[in-house]
Image (cartoon, rainbow over all chains, first blue to last red):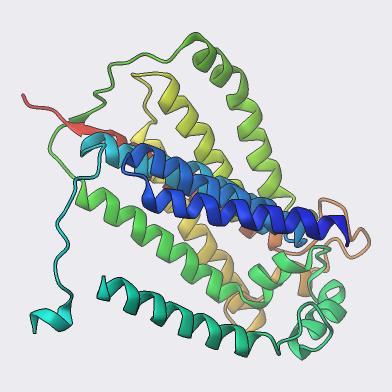
Length: 94
Length: 235
């Protein structure tokens, strides 16, 4: 097996893990870090797929700027997600 | 519980359908006629070594103008939504010594790298959008390190406006000379840089337009950061 392919699979696995963590974490600041980790791994993956310009854009916008904007938004609102009771879906409410 | 099960089933069906369709598409082969045409003719038609920027600025220049407009509308929307009569920076925690010293040291180098990315867009990977975003990250670093740091609004807004007008002006000069909007007048009529393809002064109007786009994107994203950070103060 080619080793570059192994690295790509490892990066894809890390991307999926950090995406799941970003959804699941109740601490929103940690969730933002998980989301920027997805962008960072995606930028490494773009570099492996021979698209360095896309990798640069992804690293600058996805990892730095959008993470900063989310953190500013959290600073103005609440840091922790509150528990909500599960409401029935739209097909039940009809 | 039923909702989750239904969602999982729907995702599995959509995923299977997408995988079924995309497994037949060849990846990275010489199948697409348009991209083959671009790769064969990019040097004589645009003078750019980097085919991606030639496609973005030269062949699809009008789309790029639309992209710049979308970014402008996003920046204006953020500014309008967060508008208050009196806004100031309210950060109280000072940056640590490492952060302040490091950002003072790194700021000129990040600016230089961003400018390098958009000036050399026709030679190396990158272009106006990554370069502008890199410049905006330099300003973000300064905002995080110093509690009282602010960009000069007047200067930034004027620069942004002139950059946007410059793009349209370059296109209109092309319309006057060559007969259609965003005609590459530097390359097609003057033949500037025909002898030195691969050097800095080549590639027609690609470096000119990418410099304009880089300045515009950098100032716009810095403005968005500034708008997001400031808070209303009571008098």
